[in-house]
Image 1 (cartoon, rainbow, N blue to C red):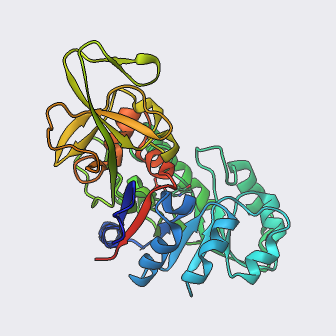
Image 2: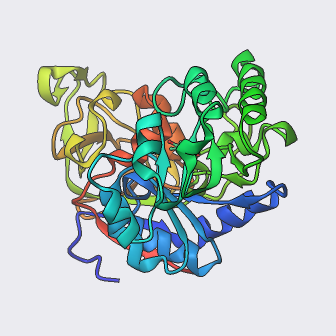
Length: 356
Ligand SMILES: *Cc1c(COP(=O)(O)O)cnc(C)c1O
């Protein structure tokens, strides 16, 4: 492993992603489990992640945009590769040429896909972003000829608040989905995202679409995380200095030493997706014990109080994400969710993919 010269090393455990996919399959016996690899597999690298899952037998993949599908098509031979974002006018021939599956999100999408083969049909049951509204479904049901020459492989919908099992919107959506399906031919259905898989049998379908849980985010917030940890980010200490009581650290002097303090400056900043909102609020780990972040996160540098960790020296490594410090933990400190932490992970890290 060529890490000697690296400032930061992001290790991505492909074996853990595969193990998470298998665990989700075991929890979704009603049907298949796809892999959502949009946004570069939530920042972890769509090509290596998709190839690893394909190698493990996964045959259904979703991305957000056509460009993302084209970037992974060749590593997914024989697999369904569907584009969630709808059928942009003028791209139909590319879908056909590359054997991609459009997710039709409107009556206009449907009309443009006539006589072009397989598709997925998105039904909106509460997100109000993409998908056919109830009145459009009624129009479609009254005019089935619009579906001529296409095979709907799945109808699908997307849950609004699956990570909050008690949210009444889950029941509401369950009812709306039943009503929508009653208007349509008996197509297979695709429903649950990661957290939806944990909502129980009422939300099971022919094809679940997890993303987050594959990448180790907790699909059951507030409960122990059933998924394996996937990312490990280690960053280098560039400098260590002792400052007297009263000295301040970083831009705008937002932190002042109450005692003589030892500060470690690490090679990490908001340009690496280490959110500025973590300033004075997060920790890293040295040898498994927390070291508090002090002062502002700047573009390339972040400062930690290592007064109680005499072993920290220039060249030492701090753990920023890993088994002791999950992306969900970092997200809580930053005031966001684990999805944003993962998709923000920077491009400057040396990336190492573990396969065993
Ligand atoms: C992103 C996305 C998913 C995956 O959601 P997770 O919460 O990451 O499991 C599933 N379906 C649709 C439509 C999505 O946009």
